[in-house]
Image (cartoon, rainbow, N blue to C red; front, side, top):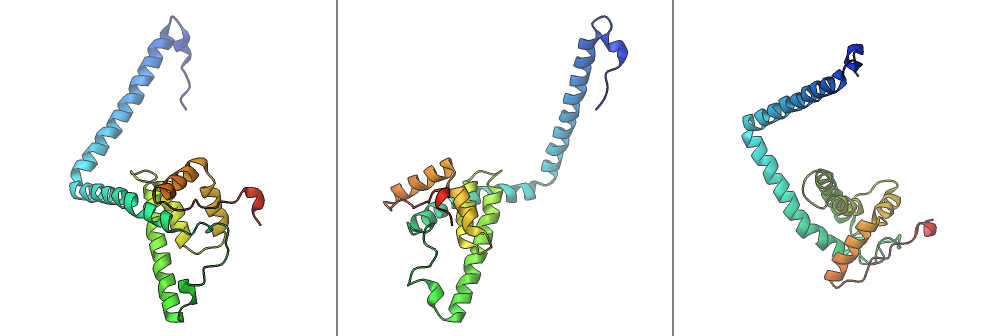
Length: 177
């Protein structure tokens, strides 16, 4: 950080110095902004693809995420065992294929959710849904931590109410084992 020269404190020069520094700072930002605009205009095709992907992720999240949340079992966060008719009871080839498809879809949704933290879309909810599909250590604790956030919980409740589904049972932190 630059120190203030001693002569600046004489005869009201402090204001002039501050104005000069602010102008230099804003001018620097203006140069950076101009460079960013120049880069965007040089890469129009790339920007078109990024814009298209952003729109696709946004629209996809508006359709897919509510469907997945509505299809979740109400006891998803309480029950530790899959239902009896689950794909996990199928032949080994089917089970591994489904596991690969489920985790692949989870990775795609996780990437989309992270992107939606800065792009339009339902980022946190998409990340939560992606975690329900992924298999990793500590998954349950992380899912519950996200699902217990007031805004996320309200969004989940609203989606399930609109789909005429029972609310998800989300245990209190004191009930964690």
